[in-house]
Image (cartoon, rainbow, N blue to C red; front, side, top):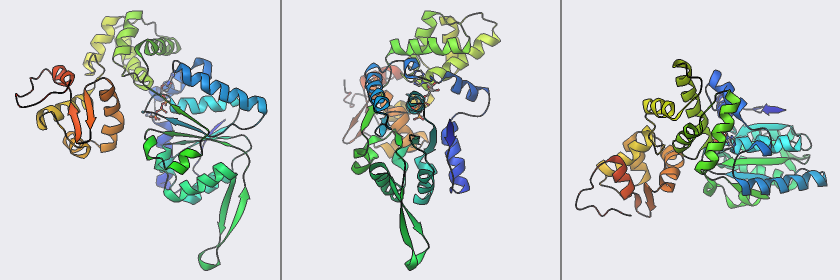
Amino acid sequence: MISEVGDGMNHNAREESLRMVQAAPIGADAVSDEELRPQGLDEFIGQPQLKAQMKLFLDAARKRGVAPDHILLAGPPGLGKTTLAMIVAHELESAIRVTSGPAIAHAGDLASILSSLEEGEVLFIDEIHRLPRPAEELLYIAMEDFRVDVVVGKGPGASSIPLTLPRFTVVGATTREGMLPAPLRARFGFTAHLDFYPRSEMQRLIQRSSAVLGLPVDDDAADQLARRSRGTPRIANRLLRRVRDWAVVHDLPRVDAQAVIESLDLYQIDTEGLDRLDMAVLEAICRNFNGGPVGLNNLAAMVGEESETVETVCEPYLVREGFLIRTPKGRVATRKAWQHLGILPPDDVNVLF
Ligand SMILES: Nc1ncnc2c1ncn2[C@@H]1O[C@H](COP(=O)(O)OP(=O)(O)OP(=O)(O)O)[C@@H](O)[C@H]1O
């Protein structure tokens, strides 16, 4: 059973919470997202080492008949953190509650969620690095001692009553592990780092998703899609749905490589998987800042995006693919970036790599 929690939250926090949980827009695509989500560990594609560790960890807890230690899932967006949290609950045959750091406005919001948990339940906290400090401190105690101190009354007459909690498992997800305070990080018994998926795994993932969607896809079409998916399952599934639109409109019985190329050209997704924002970032560094170094805030202002979006959505992939490097002085475009943009660097620019 999945429930979204928001008891004691104000309206905005509740809205935020629901937005975090639903993530995708309402409509057919949102339904497909849930349909595409693997249910069990066996269906989860790729990340073999992480899967083996997780399996051992969950099997041991099951055999011992106890709720497993708390789990931290770290990695860039769209790599499967929410999916893994759902899988943990599924494998343990437990209920799961879903909330997120920004949805918890006050420590009291978290206290009311914690005090309503049942034995063995999984509490998934997305974007756990964005919990407010008082809520974080309350969570340390709850995770370690399975206790929450409920404050009764106000002002000098207020007193706190310790409330014992049943054993539960927190699954925290973060795109910014470095922002988690050390005491919180130390409360997790198992930390899993999700990494971008290699092309072969992306191909398998696309074949799995297309089978769920009932859309036959040729092997080289899956390969073309995999190349453009930035090693990210969420992007692969989104592109696959756009290719499905193309197939429907053009009455194609199956998707071939040409259909992928033509449909994704229309959406300005290039062969390296770079989209409009990635290209804007590279263009800004090369054209406006002479190849860099440029600080994150200046760069984000130049492309009209939040610094966090540039840092967590664009940069990890651009760095990994060798378009960008991060130096102590700022971001610098590499030779590959200049070449990809098709511009010659000015003579006075010392291009790296
Ligand atoms: N390993 C996988 N195998 C198959 N499908 C996957 C896998 N990982 C993710 N997906 C699919 O990709 C989509 C995005 O995954 P998910 O929502 O779990 O990402 P996330 O890491 O929680 O992202 P965010 O941090 O942005 O919330 C899901 O719909 C899921 O179906």
